[in-house]
Amino acid sequence: MRPLDVSIWMWSDAQSLLDQAERLQRQFFRLGASDPSCWEPPIDVIESQDALIVYVALPGVPAADIAVSLRPDGITVTGVRSPPARRAARVHRIEIPYGRFERHISLPMQALEPAGYELVDGCLLLTFNKSKTSR
Image (spheres, rainbow, N blue to C red):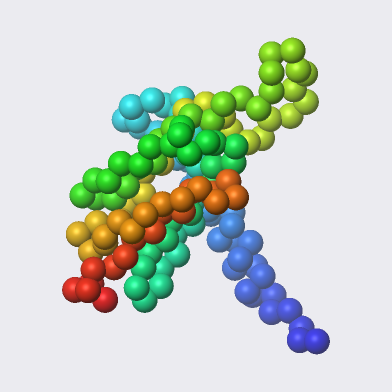
C-alpha cells in the first residue's frame, strides 16, 4: 500500500474550504440579484473532447419546476424546491435549502450547441456539444 501524499491531502482540503467560502459568499452577498432570498444549487462542470456537461444538484425538485434559459454569456437555471415537510410535522433539521433557486453558469455559448437535458437521481444534467470550430 502506498503512503498518502500529505501535500495532496492538504491542497484538497484547502480547495474544499475555498469552494465552501465562495458558495457562502454568493449565497449571502448576492448584490444586484433579482431576488436576494433565493438560493444557488451546487454544480459540477465536466468537459470532454466533444462535449460539456453541467450537473446541477436539485434533490426533490420535479422537472416541471425547473426552467433553463440560454443566454449569450451562459445559462441560468431557475425554479422552486417545495418544503420537505407538511405543516403538521415537526422539523428537527433543515440543511437542504428550499424555496426559489437561481444559478447562472458562465459558459462560452458561441462555442457550444445545446444537446439536451435530463433529470437523473436528483441532478439536472445539461449537455452541450462543442462546435467543430472550438475543438
